[in-house]
Amino acid sequence: MNGSGLYIHVPFCRSKCYYCDFYSVAALSKKAAVVEALALEIGREAVFLNSEKPQVRTIYFGGGTPSLLDASDFSRLFDAISDTYNIVACEEITLEANPDDLTPEYIQLLRQFPFNRISIGVQSLNDKELKLINRRHTASEAMEAVRLCKAGGFDNISIDLMYGLPGQTPESFEQTVCQALTLPVTHISSYALSWEEGSVLFHKLKKGVLKEASDEWLETCYFRLNRWLQSAGFIRYELSNFSLPGYESRHNSSYWNGTAYLGVGPGAHSYNGVERRYNEPSIDAYLEGIHSGNPARKTEILDDNTNYNDFVMTRLRTTPGISMAELEHLFGVSKKNYCLSNAKRSLDNGLLVYENDRLKLDDKGLFIADAICSDLIWV
Image 1 (tube, rainbow, N blue to C red):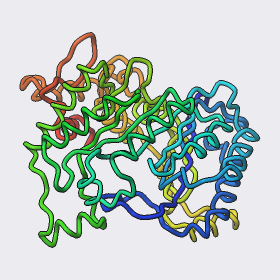
Image 2 (spheres, rainbow, N blue to C red):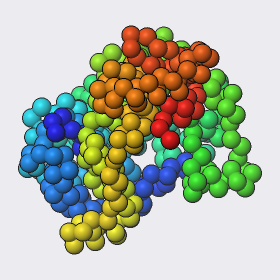
Image 3 (cartoon, rainbow, N blue to C red):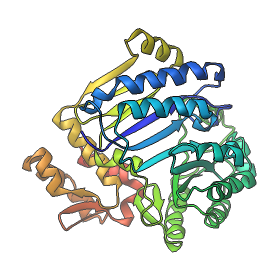
Image 4 (cartoon, one colour):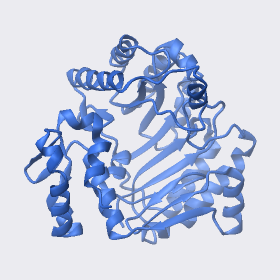
């Protein structure tokens, strides 16, 4: 299977953000052992991509905080990748980074390796909001990090922004977006805060210390964001992702267009069209499993109905929407008719549009995409 993606989960953080439920720990003493296990897993799992030496189109270092890795760590991982995979035609290699890690020295270290895209976890450009979610950086440090990356030779820079944060107002969110648009960024991912069970924010919400933003407030922020970014030349190509023309995230797009990808590291997910699997989110279980040759992971074999549901849910998130010709080719005319029949209510309500044999969200349906999608899936 050609043109696959490779995701490397680096499960370390210096401190935990209050909203986060991704698997990460502060056990940096285990970093060397985890890097070695990642290299071993990278070398052993090419078969998941159905090829002896698979062609990898994108590589993504996520976490956690991949910017806690040093030159020797990157050398070990890139050696393992190049030994096992064909990366000659690799188009995009991304590193997620915290703003406070992106010093001029660290940026120059990164330039020793084939990274061509940086994704910076900014979240907000308001110091009060950053403090309330336990981010380590300040607004000025985040802005400086973006400028330093550009000065250091990175032309493809993405930032993450959140709305619905504690203490945030529509005005402060607008100020964050306006400040972000003064920076040399080519891509912006923006999500509403999710109150994940087990997170510090969720605990405070249940105690009544914090209050969740209303759906009306979040919807207002979302549509204002769309308008502001469009005015600045950004294109929304997925519900929460915006880019200047030509700077769409190729790796993240693989999740929405059905491209196979291999995820390595504790908590990482993989998909190849036949099965979906994920590694247990535990460093100790991960290390033991890799070294014993019995990885700690769970596997789900995908049937036709599950693949249909995945197809509908991911494609509907994208701006082009669902190609009904592709749906019929993959799943048959009965599934196509089922999808169109179940879409009728949303079509009649103006939440979906059907044109050029594509089913896609109308502007009125963007903020309630999940509810619309639930009507289309096979149950």
